[in-house]
Length: 376
Image (cartoon, rainbow, N blue to C red; front, side, top):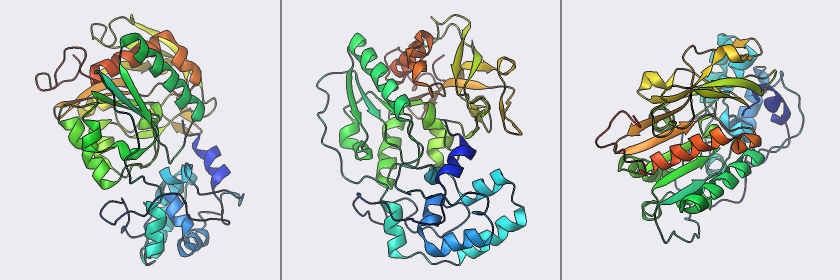
């Protein structure tokens, strides 16, 4: 999803920055990072919104490696999902430079205006939605403040509408994170994150989603929902999706790869045979979700494509691409398939997504109170 170097070069700028607008101010207790000191792990957008921190980055040579093309910091933007540390590592800056940068950033005070600029990316008020009148009911959420691939989001929505119509599911779609409220989530059997990118939930919204999942709710994450270089919510990355993105091939970005069905007797993948070949953007992760207790449904045959990002070798050895996991009493299904809009027209990819959502919604007879392993 994130063509890291090209998109970074296209959107970084040393001038013409302004605070995002259009969101209500949030309280310090509600807004993630509202009072966090500046550091090399601060999202790059926040360093570029402040004149002092931007000048520090320039002085240490971080911005010298990118063109000064004018760009907006109005989300969605890639600047929300990378930090100075990530960019420094990508461009090969020495550790001594990163240490000096960290020291200088730590001395910059955080003003109320800085906090308001950070908080402007979040939704506070619940949206005006018509709650489903029947069950099963699926909530589809697609807000992004990071990288937003509109055609992929739209193709996924179209597929989900077709699936819901054929299976008699009630479907509610929204881009407002205000929907993550206990009184609203109780109406749904599962929540689908459709290529969500960037930190999108306030602290109360995070609690509402976590309580919903762990209390027998369902979650299904599609492609970009597990593809950010930077996560500000560890529970989401480490417990819910069970993976941290590390990269994808760039030359070419989209490749044919052989997908292998690891569990052919599984309720989700039982009709997919032994596997199939698909052209898409293939994520690699810092470690296999298998090592974190996930039940692996589909893996990639790394010999069937070229898992390289520039000089970086992205081979994992054990390379899952779709999996399930019980989270408390709830269910989590994740698939990293789904960057190209055409993928949602692929019969087997569509069947995998349909089965995963049905399992997450508790429609396949598996209860995570009884089966801690996931959909086995």
